[in-house]
Structure formats: C-alpha cells, structure tokens
Amino acid sequence: MVESNNGIYRGCNQSVTTASLTAPEFKFKTIFAFKGIPYAEPPVANLRFRKPLSLTYSQLTEVNATNYGKACKQPPLASRETYNYWQSSEDCLFLNIFTPSVDPTANLSVMVYIHGGGLLFDSARQVPSEQLSLRDVVVVTLNYRLGVFGFLCTDREDAPGNVGLWDQAMALNWTQNNIRNFGGNPHDVTLFGQSAGSVSVSSHIVSHVSRPYFKKAILQSGSSLTNVWLRSKEYSTRVAKRLANFIGCDRDYIECLRNKTSDELLTAQSTAFLWNQNTPDAQPWYSALILEFVQCFGDQFLPKNTYELLESGNYNKDIRILLGHTTLESAHFTHIFDIMKGRFGANSPQIPDAVVNIKTARYDIQKVMVNNDSFDSVIADEYTKSFNNALLVSPFGFFERQRLRAAVVHSYSDYSFVCPTVLFGKNIVSHPSFEGYVYQYYLTYANSKSTCKGSTWCTNTHFDDIPLVFGQPFYKRGFSRNDKNMSTILMDIFTDFAKTNVVNTTADTREVSLNYMELNLKNLGQTFFDIIRFPGHKTPPLVTKQSVESSDQSVVTVMSGWRSLGITYLRFSSIAAKQVRQAVRHDLRPDQLRETSTIKQIKSEVKSH
Image 1 (cartoon, rainbow, N blue to C red):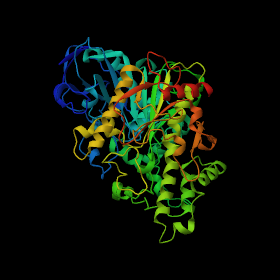
Image 2: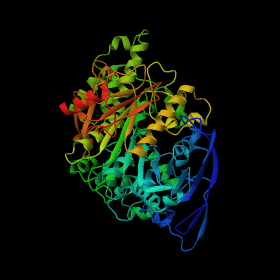
Image 3: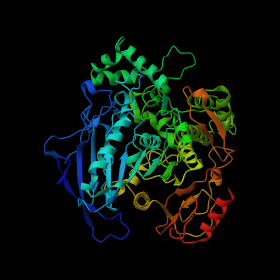
C-alpha cells in the first residue's frame, strides 16, 4: 500500500521468477504491482475530444490498484484474441506501476512505456512489466485515447486534436509528481514505446509540453517524420468534417459528435473512409490500412511538423536516445503477406491473396508511397527492376514471387517505419548544438511466435521485439531457449540504458565498421553494406523531409550509406554475447570505455566523417 497526493493505492505483491537474470541471488523475487490507477478525469460526455483534466482527491481516498483498468475504446478485431478478453470504455485513462521497491528513498530509474497499435488499438495491459522491473527499474505503462476519441483534430478549441498525446503527457506529469513514493526517481525517467508508441515518443521529444518529464528515450520502430503518422491541422479538420458528414452531423458538428454513442463513432471511423468501388483504378484493400485519425501539427502540442521542430533545435540538446527497427516491419500490414487473410478473416474480405507480377507490385508501391508520379516511379523501379516477370508468372516462379513479396514489403517498411526512425536520429545528431548521444539497433532475430516463422521469405517483422523486451519467454509457453537468451539481452540493454545513459554492446574485439555493431558471436563483423535491402541495391530510399500537408511535397533521396548518419549501430540477432562493453556515438571517454581494436577503429572513423 502506497500513499501519495491524497491517494492510498492498494496494489499487490507478485512473486516473479528471476530466471532472466544473469546471476540471480534467489529463484524468485517480489515485485509490487499497482494496476488501474486513474491519472485523469474520465474524458466522457462534455470532456470527449477535449484535453484531459488532472485528477485530484479533495480528501484521503483509497484506490484499489489490483486490477487493470478498461482499455480505451477501439474497433473490434475479431480474429485477434488479444483484443477480445478485456472490456473497453471511454473511461480508460489508467496507468500501471511495476516496482521492486516502494521505499521513497530507493531512487530507482523509471521507464514509462507507451503502447503501439496504430493509434487505434491495444492497451497497457498487453505488456506486463514484472521482468523488466526485476532489473531494479520502476516501469510505468499507460492507456491513452485512441482513434477518433484521441486524434480527432479540428481548428476548434473544444476539439483541438492530439488529445491522445495530451493524455500521455498527463500520465508523465502524474508520474513526475508521484513516482518517488513508488520507489522511483522523478528526475531519471526514460520514455519508450513501440510502433505508434514510438511515434508518440518522437513527438514528446520535440514538444515543449512534455519535455520536462523525461531525460532519455527509446524509439522502437517509428517516428512522426512521415505523413503516415502526422498530418496538418487543415487536412485533419477536413477529415473530421467528412466523418461528421458521414454520421449526419452538419452545423455544430463537434457538439453533434459528442452526443453520438461511442459505438456509432467507432462504426463511422471504420467505414467513412472505406474504398469506393466506383473510383477508377481503385484497389479495395487499401481502405483497410488507411489511418486517418493520427497526430496533427499546427496546435499547442506540435506547432510545426516534426522535421521543422527538429531543424529548429527546440528540444533537450543533451537527451540520450536509443532507436531501431526490425527487418520486414510492414509484413503485418501488406496484402502480399498471405497470413493477412487468416489474421483479419471475414472482417477484411477486400484484402487479396498475393502480388505475383511486377505491374501489380509497382502499382502497390506507388500508391502507398508519396503519391508523386516522378518520385514514385523511381522508387518503384528501385524495388522491382531486377525481377523477371516471365519467371514470376510461371509455374517455376515460386522463389521469384517470394523475393518480390519481400521487396514490396521492404518498400512499405522503409516508408512507414525504417526511414522515419533512422532519419529522426539523423536529424537529432546533425544539429550543431546537440550534446547527447543516439544509438541505433537493427533487430533481425525472430522469436518462436513470430508471424514470419515458417516463411520462405520473411525474416522477422513488426511486434517481434515486444515479447523479448518484456520478458514473455519467461512466463508464457511456446518460446525457446534462444528466445530466453535474446530476451535477457534486450531487457539488459534497455534497462542499462535507462540506468546508465549508455548502451552496452558485445565484448568481442574484432573490427566492425562505423555505425554498425552486431550482437551476434557468429556473424560479428558483418556490415550493413553486406545486407541487400532490395535486389541490386544496399541502401533503401529515405524520406528526408516531412510533408507540409499533402504527400506530394515530400522530398525523397537515395542515401549512399548509413555511415553518414553518425549513429552507433547495433544489430541484435540470434545468439548474442553475454559479456558487454559500452560504446557511444562520439567522444569515447576513458571512464566509459576500455580501448579495444574495434573502439579505436570506430573513434578514428568518427573523426574522419
């Protein structure tokens, strides 16, 4: 039981296996869990679409913190069991705390996690964090409003947009004011997230609203440096009005939308922007993938787009960042991945089976990319020009079709996740007044439950890092010993970063090239330039400028190599070294690092670039 700011929070003690620790003193350790803590007033009725209001207790109030709070309202996804076992509600602004100590003097580092799910799905209860907390950190997970409820963006004060981001900032503020009583240090907070959560973290880094609440950040597959996740206020207002028109709200459309039931809004959100079969040359599967309710810029939270905010240097110059991605990030989200049929089932009958020829592949790439004919044509050609169309359509073209699938998925992955993530780090370190460090990782390991398991062309994909980062192989069935090894390594790296400000890498001393370090005893020394991202090329197209409003204003270029980004590059693959050493982007200080041949080479290469 913990008392803080007029609240008495009654949690529970959990006995957690210590098998994930390198040298555990005991087989089990007690972790204190506090679940379902409300951090803001319920955003219902007149508070729908508005910024969250802080929750205060006028008198000492006991809060039952033994069960997760309800998830935020989201569309049903019938084939995904994980989305069906909890209830959802608009009254959903809860956070959870996992801590090894409730001693206010413990002063433990704090890690606050923002879940992914496309700003449409998921909940904080998806990531029980006891295994991370074993490593002497306090872990906070949180719910925030999703979809139309969290990201309806208009030009009106009573529906300003980005209220999902404001929810997250409110949870960070609550953490700042209360976490000491749960054993945490409010001045040593790492903000981390995956997918849409990673996008949110990038927005918090450049926003003055949440800047005071954290010192370090981890971005797992995503940033707001793309119009997939960030739109202008003007564009978003048009989206809001289209939704209102669809649902029958005309004049005071915001008040009208407030009076609709949550299920009515969810139905409208899912159908108002569906593919119109009368549209010439349309392909219906795109309607299942469109994200219209995303973050917007031009408001108090994000006055400009992310690229401009990074360029201005208006962020904490000494921030430490760890960022990275998996191999085939978008395999989950593209129709050419056959499992989409089984995963979405009857809910998305418009998703076809698989692309089998270059014409269809080029069409798909151009439609998903920046929608500018000159840029799109070049990009589509880069990903497809080495394929043999006659072989693709022949009975003997199985492997050629698999290669084409991988190439198209790479294009989606680069555009939506990889390039925005990498370029966010690039823009951070490029600012002349930046004094922090940025580390980049590349996760190639596929755990035993990866969707890619058994595929002839898919290595690993989006979400494959989540079970490993949160230690699921140690409390769920179906994972292998290698999964446990990789999970231990990732948890150690993430928590060490939160506690020490630096990233630990392999102790092997063989030389590797700048910007690339691989945590794999077998393959250590392989460079990024040995990895062919798409046939005939070793570097993907990179989106280098955030769209101002419409995607045809994006600037696309082909980089000569990752080397120019100046970011320490880590690759996490199958069986990694257990002994680690510290490495930093530049200024390798003696107190941080022992001089190995690898480090000497990195140091000299940094100076020469």
